[in-house]
Image (cartoon, rainbow, N blue to C red; front, side, top):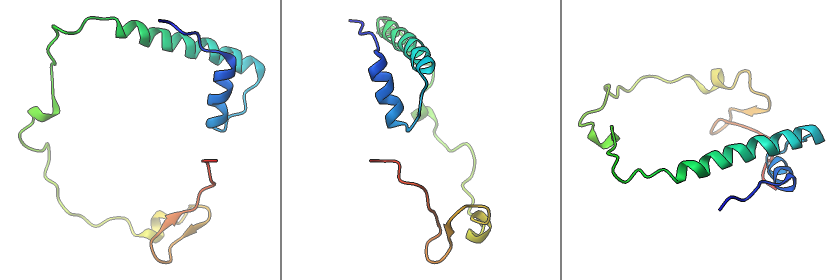
Length: 100
């Protein structure tokens, strides 16, 4: 049940990611993303019912290393090169709004 990716869909994806694409880039990404989706669709057809997993995180009985509490980087140092950073109260980075 293959559905071709359209240029309109690529333009919508680019808009969601705040990317400005040229006509050539839109055509290129339409082909490339379409090929990736077709390959992923082909992988879904592979019968893996008789395949056992080779590793599972739940197989580990103990952590790989001790969880030692250590001093962290002071907020002032972490934010020293950040644009528009605030250290008063909880330290945070101010970033532009990306969700409509």
